[in-house]
Each structure stands twice: as C-alpha cells, then as structure tokens.
Length: 159
Image (cartoon, rainbow, N blue to C red; front, side):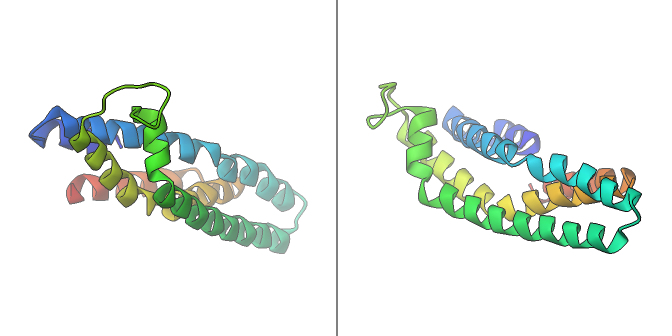
C-alpha cells in the first residue's frame, strides 16, 4: 500500500485519486489485520508439534492453516466487493453516513476502484500470512523475508 500511495501521489492529476487510495487502504489494512491470527496462531502450534516429533501432524496443521487462509481470503474478498459502498460510506462519510461530510464524487469512484481491485488480493495475503506462520514454526524466518521482498519488488515494478 505504501508503494501504491507513493505512485498515486507522484503521478495523479488530482488529490481525489490520493484520497480514494487512502480511504481504501484504511479499510484494507483494518480488514487484513483482523485476520493476523493466521500467522500468530500457526507458528506456536506447528513448532509445538515439531517439538514433540509429530512431523506429520505439523504438516497437516499447515495444510489446515492454508485451507483456512484460502477460505477466509475468498470470504473477505466477497464481503469487501459486495459491501464496498457501505464500508466507504463509513470511512469517507457522505449522505448515508452520520458524519455528513461532502465527499468528492471522483475520490469516491477512485476508492471504489482501488478497493475492488485490492480486495482480490485477500486470499494471497492470507496465504502469505499462514505460510509465514508455518515457516516460523519450522524455524525458517529467512524465506518469508525473501518472499516479502520479491512481492514488494513485483508490486513496485507493476505499478
């Protein structure tokens, strides 16, 4: 999101585009942090099973975490896309909000577009989170960092 914000800030024609990205990013960040347990809970569970020499159970738990990540990611994607107007109304204000702020129509449209596009990344984000937890349980902290750098490089080069 930082890379997206930088690019939009540098190359946009109006502040409405940056306002749209900022509003969408707030929703996405909150939504993704709610599911941070995928990493936090998976790490000690996998490590504990490995410490008890239950390697097969650790692998099974990893598969369950990845399956849960896919299911939750798809569900969140559907909620974000289907409820984007309600969520953006809460964040940006507007006629349906108690904030009664006049929202520029173009910033609202940019926010809708950005939120819809980024919502489809939810399954990948959750898979990364669960994978990081699994790898940490296997005492591998380097691989998630390399994947993080690769993902950010890909994001930077595609923007």
